[in-house]
Length: 429
Image (cartoon, rainbow, N blue to C red; front, side):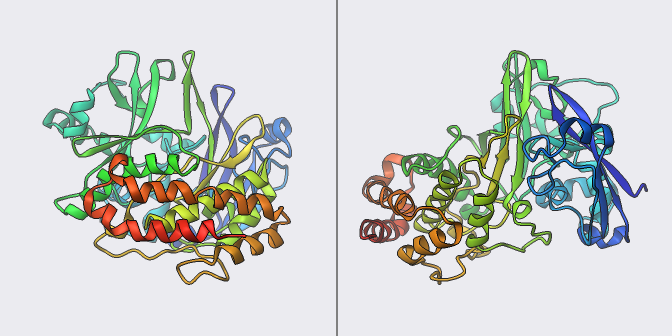
């Protein structure tokens, strides 16, 4: 097996060889194997010093210099299939489903051919191509009910792997694109000129009612986030046991598809180990360094932490937040994603990312605002005002949660959280 991969970047309506990443240590170490990386000479000449969508990530601006690391670059780890997609791909590669680090490199070379964002592994994209080039479209109902024709077709052609390996997480997910004929196709198989709308479709997991409820409530939660003033992309749609999530890293127009660069919080803060998280302080500092409008992005980040706590979304790991970088140079947080009542999860999930001080699971927002202003150099008053503005909408959700689609037991659980946070934010000075 080869010990290098080529990173392609989508720009100017085409895939371009941008960089090469080579293993300099034992591949069996997985993502902790040392690497040597560098941009191609021609690419570096064209885009030198850029850290926007033309860069692999904001921390590695385009340069003639290579970089050696004691692990994989974190943006590469973001492209590695995990969760359900990983298990499916391991089966496809005739490897045990329990394979851990030793499977990472072969999984990357096969499964990173169509990830979220504007990067892909060239070797994986080649592995992904169907020899016959055939296309098979499905209706929304075919997908939502996981009808026999749909699941059989995917199983026979190994296509669930192709559709799911580009997205991480424990829930079964698949990347689908609506074409000019109104049908849905596997994203990687549909030519850009036929694409109209791009989706991540998330499916229910087994018979557990609490997991089913989390999925059902994700769309209402996103509506609530919009009401709270958070940055939200488009309405989610629940159909049977499938959640249709419009993608914000793809823009289809005039027969072309624009792919926006995405970079997880793990990459932004350089956390290579799965489960490793930054503090909220680190996240705010990095946003202050790279964002086009640091104040707007830190305000948005603060609002999201308030919303996560008030609505008991405890699953705030380093890959549930990301920044977007476009070709015009703008860098900022992506719209919100993976926002759901994760307190319902049967495994029990604790809040991972915390403030370095004044936290203990329920932050002292007055102290947090002071700390963020001091650490980032941002003005305190706008930080204060952005949280004060959340008090009234939080109270409105507590009073009228059913109108947003909250189920009775979820609203009952949340009401006191919501009212308590509304009062705390109102009292800020």
